[in-house]
Image 1 (cartoon, helix red, strand yellow):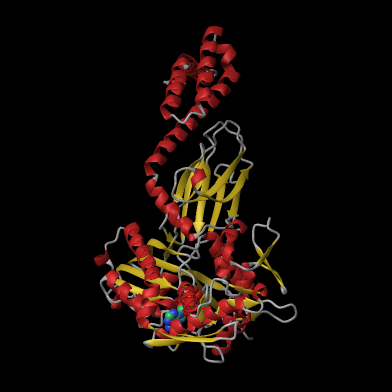
Image 2 (image 1 turned 120 degrees about the vertical axis):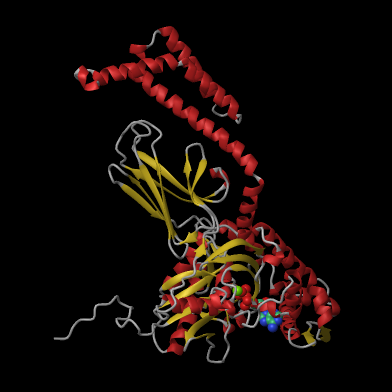
Length: 628
Ligand code: ADP
Ligand code: MG
């Protein structure tokens, strides 16, 4: 009788059978797919031999969406239906999208929705759906090349991507029908591609700077690798600095030289941008490049640009990237000589001047022998191969860290941090909390992200409620809140009451987005405001303590105030309670504390009497010798 194969669908039954896996660099400007074949990681070309896929999708009314070079070519004639840079929008709310909005030509629909939708002839689309089209195209390319379905993929995301942006990227993969082994940070992937995580590279323990200058964004990450764990010491950059800016400068220069004044029409501008981009890329390998413009007045203008002139134009932009590097080093508390390796990533680091100046800043030649626009995809492919189980001998799993601390709101608008930033993932932590009021049967759990002490200064990720807590006196219930972050950096929060076992949980799908600038700002804020935060924390703590005293005193008075107090003493206590209540809105911690202590003094005798009383009633009915 034949035996049934018992294996998970999609998982091979034979342990050593090779499983197909791919790494995907889902970029703002260009995306790539790579895979490991015969032990070598390489990016996969399309039928025309092109490795890059422009991250552009055109949604027409009738046909299926068009992805890549064809879509990019249509952008000029059909700008509203041709979506570029979806990565800038993914996982972000409309408010943030509007902030970016000045530069985006698209029409956004139902502005009240949490997720922005772009109106196109092919329907109203979210950035997740646009990204899914890019992923589908790349996965198809991999499956065609490899000759079978992919068991899973590793997709890279910027180090600063928050939970919402990571979740949205994963959603796009799901939509594209892909299994995501995990998401990986782009700088980590670049380091993996260079084998910096392997002991034989001699740098297995060390500090790596990843300089990533792409089409529209610049990212600098300072990583520290210790025993297979990558820690992001600092992630900085400029979300509005990249190769497009070089094109713009060069196009402006050309239009000025051609005596086209400010009023150049859209078409002439696009033409100038395209000519500039071509000349720029050419200048990376030749000393001069020609620019040609066909102007609306019928003139043909042309000029030859040499490298020195181009470098003079772009130097101020390179300066900006280097300033961000210095800031990141400062944030990471790393001095230049402590950096063990510098890695170049992104098409714009092909520019010789960029390399020169990065080398000068770090005092060492950067690693650039892997094509800088393929290096991230290559690192992702290596991780995908590992996660697919194709490298049984290699069990070194790289770990990422979370970029911002996670915690919950406690009384008084304070944040209790459960998982500090830079914790390696996956990670799980739990902490026990208690109820604030007698008979409290529900508890609101508010999940927060950020480095500051006060709820208002952190970012709200999710709220949920734990209901059905058995009514007990304040402080008796034990509520365990647990945080669990999986390898993709996605958060699950659960709360359970330990005596009854009732549980509530959420998978955090946060209200969309933080910008990378905001993350950087939040981090530097927490440093600047440390003193201020401490003061604010003391005020809140005093407030909570005062409220707790008032609450329990009120409960006590209702229970036995009449029996144990005469009118004069009761009036004294109630006056002190009123005085304390009046300080609750004060921002002076000492004033609240003084009023609380005055109240505690006023009710000291009463409290003593209550204690005696409760001991007596506890003893009532017991034989005296039971207490001996
Ligand atoms: P992203 O990470 O934003 O998707 P890439 O890493 O693919 O972007 O970089 C795209 C940018 O690199 C574009 O601005 C492109 O013009 C620029 N680029 C590509 N090749 C060269 C080159 N040889 N010289 C200069 N710039 C280049
Ligand atoms: Mg990139």
